[in-house]
Image 1 (cartoon, rainbow, N blue to C red):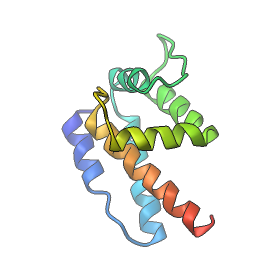
Image 2: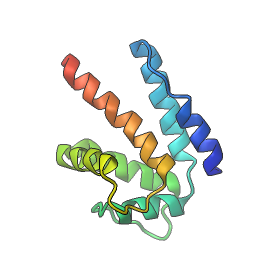
Image 3: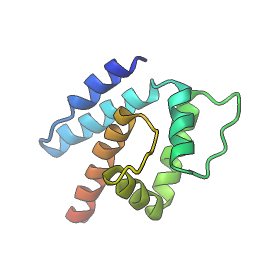
Image 4: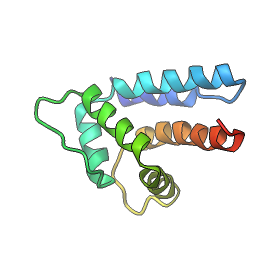
Amino acid sequence: MEMADFERDVKAGGRGSDVDGIAVNISTLASLSRLDKRHWVEFVKAYSLPIDIRPRDASRDILGKVLSHLEDSADAREKLKRRMVEPRGVEASPALMKAFGILLRDDDESTEKGD
């Protein structure tokens, strides 16, 4: 997937009803699954995520590992959110960070609602 296509998909993420929000998140995840492996490797390194990337791992494998890590670690989610606000020389793809911003923002909103 080309970054321009990914950025277009991320920019389409608007706010609306809960069903619309789920649709946006699913679309964002689908876009993330199409990113090149090298973008994921850069992201994992830039954010020092404790994820083992094997040579045979595909892009989707790495996405799954990243999502599992973020699901299991509230601290990792908070650290990621803080670093998105204050990037301090992080070299991860801006489009990738925007996608995680959309997904993590929705995590905040569901927490506020008590879900």
